[in-house]
Image (cartoon, rainbow, N blue to C red; front, side, top):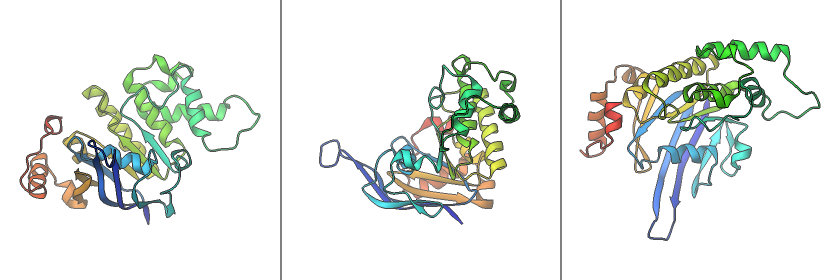
Length: 267
């Protein structure tokens, strides 16, 4: 079953001006239910633009986008949010700093539901949050009433990840969600990502600048260049993949052009 079907989408910014930029050039991508696809490419390749197009941040010029068989191409970002969970690069985005951890989780859990006059968080909800937070292995299960603004960047990002997946979304979008973290914390957040995606069988698109992370996580890897997908590696081929193999395949797919982004190689 297809969970995401992006067909021939085009997006040009500043069309008809000297600053015209074709960000997506007839891009097509399908993800089956439960696919965990990592996305890499140089700066300006169109990675984040693709995620923003899927999320409805801006309309595409042409082409269609369907999530779980529903055509969402003309839906606003707000209306598309019922299908999508998203984690951004900035750990400060996605949580309410002045609210407690349990209050943030309650907001995420009740997203899309009809509001009632019942206030507060139940004992059962609190216990559920404690169990979920324990998965992260960051000690947050004992800090339910702590203000989120007191947490470290890594703790906030892990919490945002949990919030994005709390009400099982049709599609989880991760936009370089570990790029702002130190290597040790990033590894912990990626480990939590893997656990949550596997536990809930979430269809996931994860943009990263780190080749090793792109290879180590997920069952599929795509590489983008100039708004198109130039490599699509999956299954056994991906399991055996090395950074050297990937660089070689990129050079072949791009006509011998060198892969310019050092952070991908060194990450």
